[in-house]
Length: 352
Image (cartoon, rainbow, N blue to C red; front, side, top):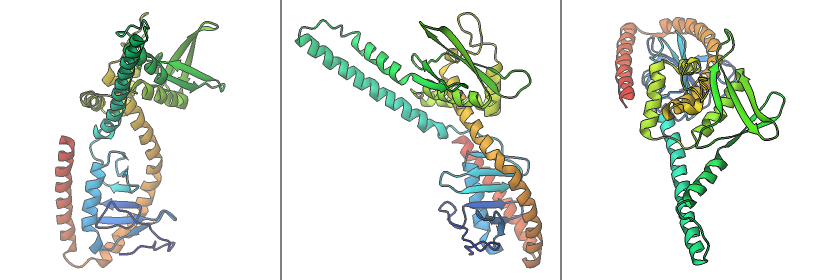
């Protein structure tokens, strides 16, 4: 098993994800043709692995690629990043788009548990203060104390700051996770969305601000994270995932909600985020996060596809020279086996 690049002679690194092939931090594989490359992170050249070292590794790459949800694909090539740091490049027809609840279930669950614990502490503190107050002869309404403390806690965690184009910091206060924010389509034929926020002060009255383009993405991400600070139940997360899957993609869900004519405020203007059901707001945060990851990954795909085409030409010549008689039938049989296993594992993952 080689460990250095055949072109620049530098180390290819290692991984702990593919047990049958622990070499490299970026692996490219083609289950259909039975090929496996280690992409050098220094010179970006593709190192074709020996035939005898490929098969189990290709199967493992296919299985792990299907189980890794941080991925994006074109018609010919897919890119996925494993949490352990390994990057997988999959050659072949793209898999059916998937959206997994497990990526966000733990995160929203942890947020919810924090709020429950904080609420319990507030109630306990209220009971203690009430008891002390009665002992000292203070007239404190014990029925209102927990509500007041929870309100103070809600206001404390419900304050965010957004940066305006002129450099000023805009402070927004949210009540029970609801912030003054409206989601609308981008102006004209421009793709994406824009958001409107507003604040009221005694000195300036009501001020409204629009965020567009990348500024809208950043500001909306902050607002959604604060809006969903209390997390969500498992049922709410599953409902949110279902809404994204029904839309067909994270990008499409955001576009549909931005163009929707419902979720109106008191004067009939649509797009009020605070009027959306909790699972919809959870889905928006998931979708915005997925969209940002997808855009980051897509920038690499074009270069990867060009490199793969060059590497495939060399691999085809190399394999034809080295493979013994009868090897083509062996390749075809393993291709069918990997495809069947991948489809079966994919169905199981979808079911889970």
